[in-house]
Length: 469
Image (cartoon, rainbow, N blue to C red; front, top):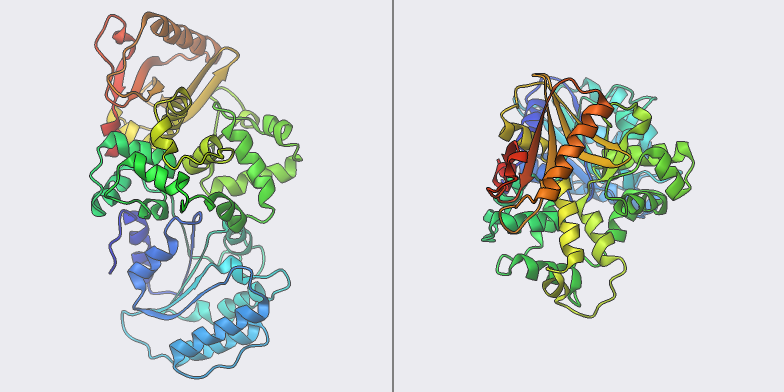
């Protein structure tokens, strides 16, 4: 088995499916480059009864021909190209039926990049429905795994199917980016001897996406890697943005308009504000937001004390944010641009913004550091006319944590004017929300808060080490 970093929960779910005594239809989704194919191949690569990878932009005829070639390879018999998908699945059923039943062993079928198989005029989904309902669902030794990056297709055609596959999916697994802990484990595995400050900087750029991390040269520093991946003449990540969005989403331009609007607004936008920015009609925007959220590009945060219509959408895909800040309009010929500019005000401001997002993506680790993992909590954002709090943790033990996130190269020193600003913000928050609970200001920083005359305003502290737990 290949080395697998993290994914313990996903592996546990797959093991339960493999060891069940019923037919299993498993759907694995997640954004491009997240490691779906790697995970399945690492776990089951030598055990497939059949597998097929859909080809991007292939015609129906080409897909069917490739499917027939795959079936020939697994069955060790010559298979002629099929005229339609009903014929293809009938041949797959015949082949699988002839395989001997082995106690404790599954007949594993893996169809990867399934959204690419389904052309607009294809009968693929109808044939899949018939295959599963008429035969597959009755085979207690069959485990059918469907995967793909186009989350919207998987949701519409499989998990939320209103036709023949309605309620037929037995397990849905969504792969998310690595946490900081998993990123550290991966970097250690490839021999990158970086401290946690550098790892967080890399995370701000690459966002815990396994494939992006696999491009890192362990012999180079973090800054040198960023230059090599994005700014060198042969930069591997130079074309990634278009390839990512156009492979994932039909009508990618509209999705890009949404994430671009969010990238320009540090505090996030409500749906009505996004409609104004993008000029997209409400139903269309709603569908785009749903698909972006399910693909882990954006996150919707409820505002404390507000209705759902005032929810805040924030761009939480760190790579996309980095792209809009430093790649989209950067026409430099400097192959070491990042090394030469990493201490500029623009980069430092972006790091402060990105660190806030890193913290929001590690809410469980923050709760653990506060000792409240076992306490029921709700996480909110909050904003008023002249005040904003990016993370509010409302606790069942009648306390509320108002979190400040600060990225610093050293202990963070709190000056008098900032301490006064924090106290004023707490007062505004209590007044506007009518909060009757105790309020605790919590600072999440890289190295902690420096002891000083005004440090008492930080009533609890979390450092970057706590985010790696």
